[in-house]
Image 1 (tube, rainbow, N blue to C red):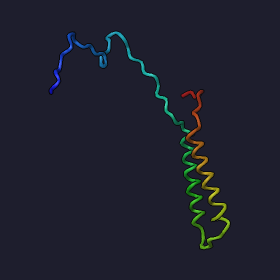
Image 2 (image 1 turned 60 degrees about the horizontal axis):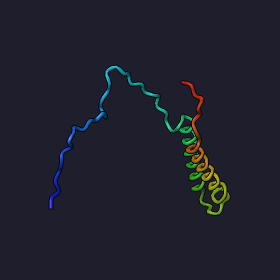
Image 3 (image 1 turned 180 degrees about the vertical axis):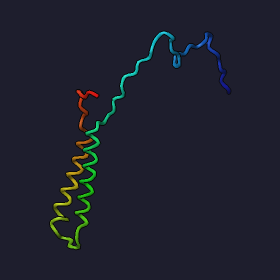
Image 4 (image 1 turned 30 degrees about the horizontal axis):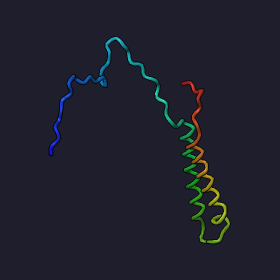
Amino acid sequence: MAQKQTKPSTPVKTTAGYRSPGKEVTHAPIQFVFDKSNYKFFIISFAVVILGFVLMSGTTDIYSTTKIVVAPVVVLGGFALGFYAILKKPSANKVE
């Protein structure tokens, strides 16, 4: 059974693309989620994580303190700095 398609009794008015000729459209400045400082912290955290993995690869000694203790702490510190970079709010009183 096919359903009947009915036309509306009155024309449908749409205003999606309508601009009144007398009104000017003002655009607010774009507010980004991340600030310049967020990106700096994120790049620094990425470098710290890479440094931790380089320390972890280290020498041939498997049980060295650098591989077992220092490198994982450096990597976790880099991840913590990355979380801080993501969660840090941009400054509200910025004037440019």
